[in-house]
Length: 184
Image (tube, one colour):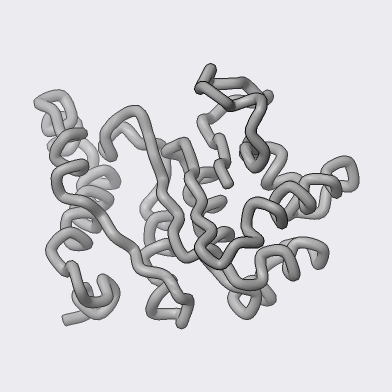
């Protein structure tokens, strides 16, 4: 499954090869409308179900905002973790097993990302909450997105500095839960 969550008020294609021919590629607007129960998007459940039916199903979310992280979190959680949310009842059986691997991809570095620390922390806590998923940050990818301009931005933005620290702490604790490392 691929969810395109790139901050547009209307659907927009990215121009990727196979984007219009392949199944399982959805805009965040379609995916969110479906799992929130919008009546015009009931058919999206069949698309999501086909994409996630395989035991080795993975998902890619393209975007770096709160909606992108929310989509990633919904895909990573399994039904028990979704019962306490306001997801539509029709989405629960389709998302019942969660997805073992969800990758979030952006075109810029993490400092330029539009997500808040609250959304990021919700992803970080999934393992601690008993979901079958790990939060993993690749150090080389984090470094690739760090430029002189982003270093300057970090000096002048406490929220961005907190996000940077949370991501760098995730790199530092490979092999154990980020949540437990933050508490120690």
